[in-house]
Length: 151
Image (cartoon, rainbow, N blue to C red; front, side, top):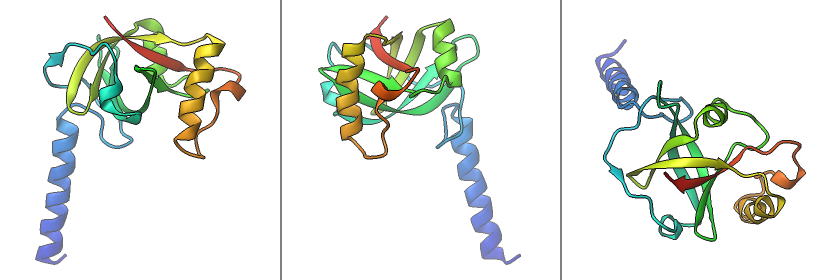
């Protein structure tokens, strides 16, 4: 192996280790506890934009964090697992206390599962408008949609 290739490989390995060591998720890989100081939750989430990506931490006893897409509708922030009862959705069912990092700020929140048809419909309009690849939750048998509320 050439010296430059060895150096590049070492740098890539070091960068990956640094990301994994920070505890949070890395791309599609889950992580542990999110670090940072907890800020008060905003009354409305409009300042973070209509949609984006956040880091969600569940399971306070053994922290588990993932990158999730969020959508803001009428000032309320939602995360959606679609029709898949993901690991993080199962954690929320057991304990709704979560932490969410958006735009570098960390918030202690409560994830409230959304089951009301009207609220799901409002979310669906915003969700499906973001991309043709977003499945409409109104057509799913089960919906794992959560609204983030202050604790």
